[in-house]
Length: 119
Image 1 (tube, one colour):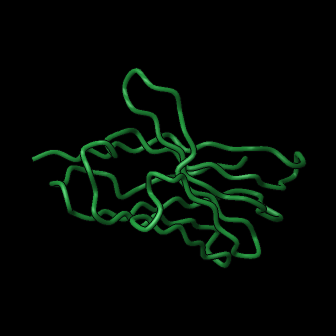
Image 2 (cartoon, helix red, strand yellow; image 1 turned 45 degrees about the vertical axis):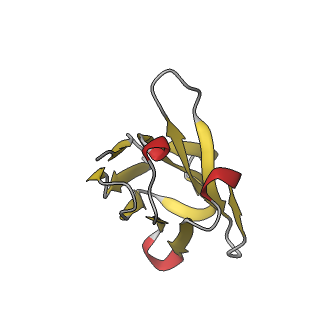
């Protein structure tokens, strides 16, 4: 059974920084794409950033230059460094990964972690 466990959310003032982590565990043979999504109240879930196994990255326009996604393949972990945070970044952030396990390829989600940016 595969699980994604997130950590690192919290409350911060505008201009501050947070670092999110998401560790995948279980019977994992391989991980392809990993990413972060977010969902603000009353809005649809949206892609924030993604990274594939070769290290190629993709970012939403709203976070380019402020957020950095990275991964540690040895630890099956993906990170999201968030700098220059704005009130508009307030949302629940979800980790996502495309994983090959004993049941084949599947997409898994973390439980979500709250990020609140407010003065």
